[in-house]
Amino acid sequence: MEPISLVHASLGEQELAAVAEVFASGWPAGQGPRGKALEARLAQKYGVADAVAVSNCGAALHLAMLALGVKEGDEVIVADYGFPAPAQAALYVGATPVFADVRPDTYTIDPQAVADLVTPRTVGIVAVDTVGMPADYTELQAIADRHGLFLVEDAACAVGATYQGRQAGALAEVGCLSFHGRKGASSGEGGALLARDPAVGKDARLRSSFGIGSIFDMGNVVGLPIPTFTEIGYNFKLSDIAAAILQVQLGRIDELLRRRSAIAAQYAELLADEELLTVPAVPADRTHAWQTYMVTLDASVDRAAVATELRGQGIGCGHGTFAAHVQPVFDAQQKCPVSADLFARHLAIPMHAELKPNQVERVVAALRGAVRTHSSSTAVLGGAA
Image (cartoon, rainbow, N blue to C red; front, side, top):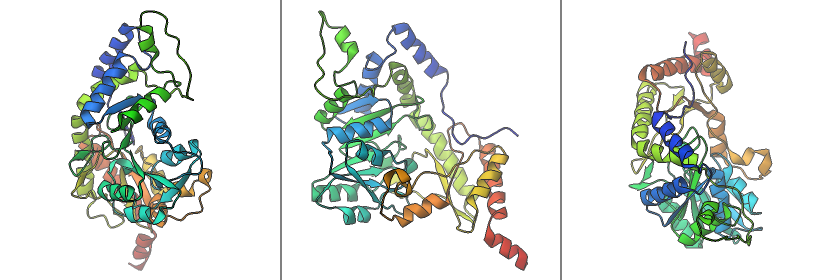
């Protein structure tokens, strides 16, 4: 049977036409006219003072730590469950990531866990919109304000999601977006930093280009401007090729999100009565971007065996995301039991805007069969019968 991929980018003729225009322009590199147009569009879309297009969300998180003045000896509280880029960003600047456990229902950072972790060394909080579900920003902002901390939103997975009527990415003083191939809007790779404070955006933009700013701008000045390197910078620029693709993708985001939401609704309906797994639930005050669709398997189910069976039938699947505190690179001494449990029991099944209803039905049928075959509880029940 035809394979059903776990992820698939919705890129087509419109995006190809935009790339062709960049080729014709003669400036495919970063911080050119397409990049500037993308930044202006993002700033307008999210209602922020500045938007800086960068090579990926990890770069945006790194730049956020630098712009917010995080330094060696500081502690940054980060969501434990999710891709561990926020914790790595803290390490990049010499700070210590402190892992906060998550809610068992939304998989997002638990505000009470955050409050319990604040110490005199704490300078900020990085919340993660886990696989597209926005975190509890009202409670998190209250904690940040009470202790004089910054709040950063890692909205890598959440382009198109909302929280209390506001767009994910604009829910904190700094938001970081990803345009990786599996995201709701994609250029293959890419990211952006969104800042309410224009000084943060200015700092991030300068550091993203070796600390000297836009070469494109310098090339359009009459005379011979010679840049001076005054700060340590990085090569985090987003190419104008990627920026052109993203301008098209942003125009399609509502359509693509409607498709993902319809697929999520179909999964929820078809799996509602399956006792050996739980489907995700979305609180009434937010909407989900559905970057990933994760089911929570019953503790009796052998997840590895289920994944092997699904992949054997040509159906893509994955473990979901990560409990950062158990990753050896961090050598963490903390315990985050909810995150650890989700890391052990989550299974990601195909989710992208190109899935067809009959493919969803095939995934569900295969998943039902696999969890029942590889559950110790059903084996016991079968033997008793």
